[in-house]
Amino acid sequence: MTPSPVFEHTDARLGTFTLRTLDPAADAGLLHGWVTHPKASYWMMQGADEAEVAAEYRRIHEHPHHDAFIGLHEGRPAFLAERYDPSRVELDGLYPARPGDVGMHFLCAPTDTPVHGFTLAVITVVMEFCFADPHVRRVVVEPDVRNAAVHALNAAVGFEIVERIAKPEKDAYLSVCTRERFEAARTALAARAVQGVTR
Image 1 (cartoon, rainbow, N blue to C red):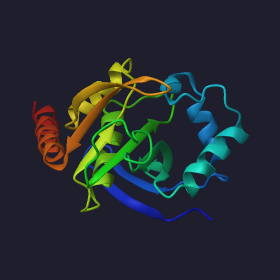
Image 2 (spheres, helix red, strand yellow):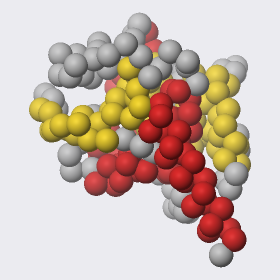
Image 3 (cartoon, rainbow, N blue to C red):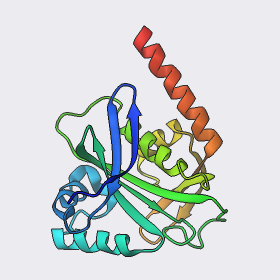
Image 4 (cartoon, rainbow, N blue to C red):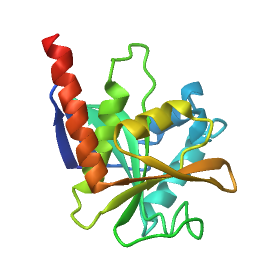
């Protein structure tokens, strides 16, 4: 039985996006194709087999401070999202945590027919999901310093790079987005979208 959606957001141009809780067993085959694809190199699971992918997401599923979701676009699986407590997962001891901090990761499914603006829509949906919790004040991320594409996306939704940090598996840019910065970025993106339509 497919898990029920936990969040839904409608993009004015691209339609409906939903998130449902990830099922480590049922979704393992789907995830394996995504996380081992060459375009997912920064996910660092290139050599994993399906059993290893299932085990990793079972670990996340059972973790008290980390969870994962399958994102759907118009009802079809299209991206992976993770949410975590950065003071306990990923960034434990590496930054000055504050109450109301939440961390996130996202990965778009590989496709042979990319849609312009899709990845920006996905990160916006994941940010909307994070801030739907009224206790969340900041979203904190730690992308690889070499991942220029995600740095640009992060900036577009309101993230600021705080500092470069050394993690065991990578050098990362600790980046933070407050609720206020996200709301301002969302307004700016909506205005640009309207301008694009009316030109």
